[in-house]
Length: 433
Ligand code: ACO
Figure 1 (cartoon, rainbow, N blue to C red):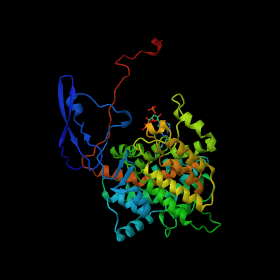
Figure 2: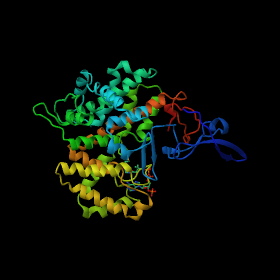
Figure 3: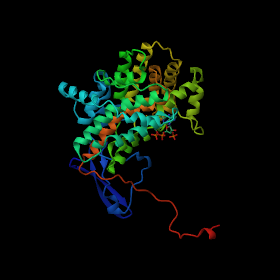
Figure 4: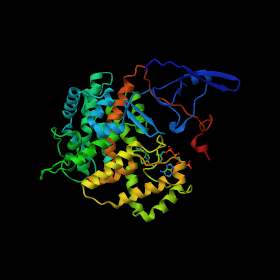
């Protein structure tokens, strides 16, 4: 962590006592109040369930301005990276902090590509799962199991091993994700083909069969690559914080990424695109939209518009705009007329003009259009979160490495406001009523 200089202080008054707390500025974004010594000085903790006002770390990787709808990776706007770059370039940027030169990019692509195969025994590991297992259950287990197969990259104190583990995960996640898909539909695994680019190779591993030639559609591989870029990192969200917390204990990187995948699975996080598609299917036709909008606004109904709202974005999610364009491109290429797209466009139009959504600053998020797009590409809904995990792996790794390489890093250990029973004595079972 950089030596921090505080130009401002915050004053805290409790009863008749005063404390002065340092305030640190970021390069952009809100200042933070340093409460690290609060407990030792005041005997009190802060209380912030859901961490809505808590900065958990210092980071140089990703910046979000939720009010303005801005997302930057290492300072570069997501729109520019998605328009002009490719996913492996974004991986390099997130990991190393700068865009690569042509030589650095060629070397990086080569290193990632040489790690795409998984240990042959992983095949047998897969056979243990039920065919109808959710692919995310398979992902959590398989990525955690990598630590059992690659002992030579689990020593987190060795920078070389850290980088090898990072390369392995970026390279093998597409292979493992495709294997999870193939296993669930009873088809043979397809080995990676290293003369293809990252996204094309993944699509081939998912959709090729041994009995036919498979030609990757360039529109679909461009869309896949862009979807990976959009999901590559998103600062200290729930799954990334999970990875950091797991890593803070010194756990190996494969175990930490498996923890991130487990967290991502939830419907309020990575599972939202699956939920958004289900909701659009349930709505079915534009005429039924008002009924669902009314339910979303009803305080006595727990129903929410899935793919709407975000903890950080109180403006249009910049990824959602790119996702919407990608969705139209994919449907046009596949010559698909999907009624759900009409429902989605109309629902968005109605919601964006509705006082409830305007007042609460609820806009479509990245998941709103991604479900329709992925379905048009041939993925079943159960694979949506897997694709998100594949793409987010590089962000998790970059954040994990940043934490491990911070000399001031310590184990994450939040405190609590205890409201349970006070001290009481054990009662033998015969005397309990
Ligand atoms: N539909 C209807 N009302 C909503 C929605 C929605 N999608 N989202 C939030 N609200 C309302 C809440 O009811 C709440 O109203 P209230 O103030 O009257 O109680 C208010 O807006 C604020 O909502 P919170 O849940 O407090 O906001 P929070 O920041 O905690 O939640 C979240 C963000 C979880 C994303 C929420 O908007 C949501 O559940 N959205 C649907 C699920 C979704 O799309 N998740 C994907 C997130 S993006 C990602 O993970 C990649």
